[in-house]
Length: 318
DNA sequence: AATACGGGGCT
DNA sequence: AGCCCAGTATT
Image (cartoon, rainbow, N blue to C red; front, side, top):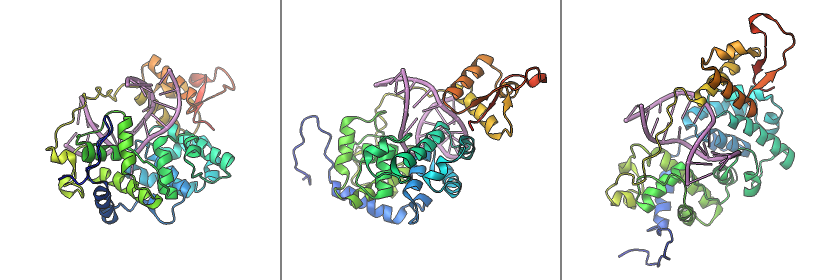
């Protein structure tokens, strides 16, 4: 006999078989298996948590960890980052990817200084209003930096819920209203419990309930999992759009130009930029995009006819 | 709802 | 070669 006889409204998200059992098992597992990450250390700051969350937007933990340590050592407080040169910020960001995040993180630091006296706010709406902070990061900072209740729904949690609750191999490409309601229903009512659940459910998705080869035998909720009960069926969603090949894309070209300018000691002449990509039209398009994004700066030409390198020069924004 | 946006490691 | 990674902003 089912443990939960509560009737489900038509169209509502499927009820969790036993929310308390799921939460208890996952949190207990987390108490034993949580990774020892620096942004979880007792001496972490709210700013450190925010920095880690921005770095972790689409960049794996293993690559973020050393970058985060160096970054926090150099710019421990929002005011420190706010006062830095964007060029230094972009160089420190190095190859974490999506360098616009670095620019936004600095804008965020400046906004924290100007709007909040240099202290990271704990209010969700105020967090959401900061540059580079979206719904996930706002919820994560609230939970992990301030221990407050929030619905943290990242790719890991979405996958765990898709499997345990819905019995699907993978979540839908974009979150649905019902999915958010199901996530909300699983979050404990109290601040401490909710924050613990957020960290634990994310960790389970990262270490056990992984996208590729889930380690179901090691899972604390293997006997409560709807997906496993159904025989671990394959993904039912339409095949993802064929991912754009990396070679030859604007993203690759932009990345090469940024790599060139990160390493350049002086503003680079157009000939140096041309050397990183042969297709003139594509290179110019990408350069224009980087200028528009504020990732690259054009330096005024001081004198004409200065040999082969006459013409505009480019550098990271000062 | 779709797209653009880095970069690297794994299968 | 394709997939995945603690997403966000813009169209």
